[in-house]
Image (cartoon, rainbow, N blue to C red; front, side, top):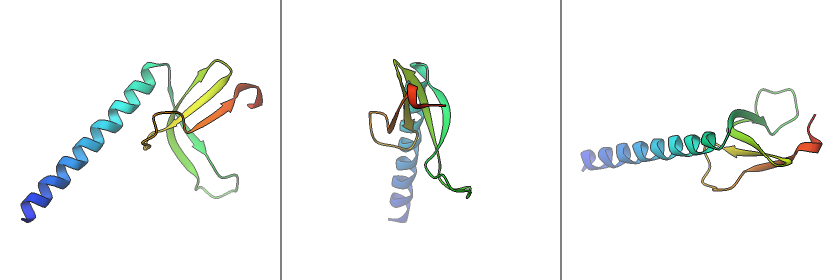
Length: 82
C-alpha cells in the first residue's frame, strides 16, 4: 500500500518535470529568453516570478514557467516599456 503511494507520487513528479521541461523548450524555440517578472513594486524581495518571454510584433509576451495556461500570462505593449 505505502509502496504504491510512493510509486504514484514518484511518477507524478517525473511527469510534472517532463511537462515543465517541454514547455520551456517550446517557448525557447520560438525565440524566448529567461525572464524574472516582478509583480510587486514595493521594496521587499517578494513578488518575482520565473518565466520565458519573447517579442511578437509590438508586444512582449511573458509565459510563467509553472503555469497550465497555453497562452501568455502577461502581454506588455512595446510602446509602454522603458
